[in-house]
Image (tube, rainbow, N blue to C red; front, side, top):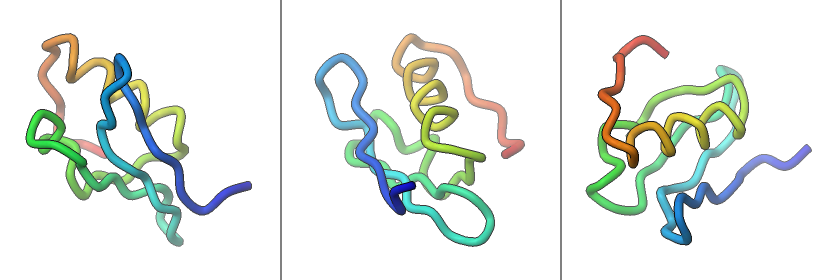
Length: 64
């Protein structure tokens, strides 16, 4: 299992997630994904789904 992943949405880099003891922390690659900056996800797939939702215009809950 890798310690970091690049998250892409529609061929645009949304950010990277880096594994730590709490899960995978998101680091935004563009302002479009700033709402996810610093959020912790259980896995990289969960972070990717959140980035896709954000790109489609859904609002993000602050619970992580």
